[in-house]
Length: 77
Image (cartoon, rainbow, N blue to C red):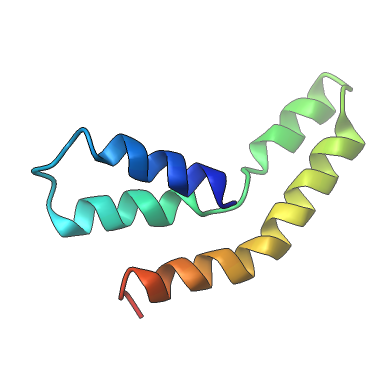
């Protein structure tokens, strides 16, 4: 939840002409929790179902703090 926005910020350094809205959007999207599609795939193939559901639950709970902090840091709210 912290590493992915940091990596995204590093990658955005290669695109210096991006408008503010684009790089702010990229950072905010990078801070979002894991997708529930990973659980659907785990369930479909009956592999790592408990781990996928726990990861989604944890990342969603943590995103309350990280996304809120990112909104404040980016001056969006």
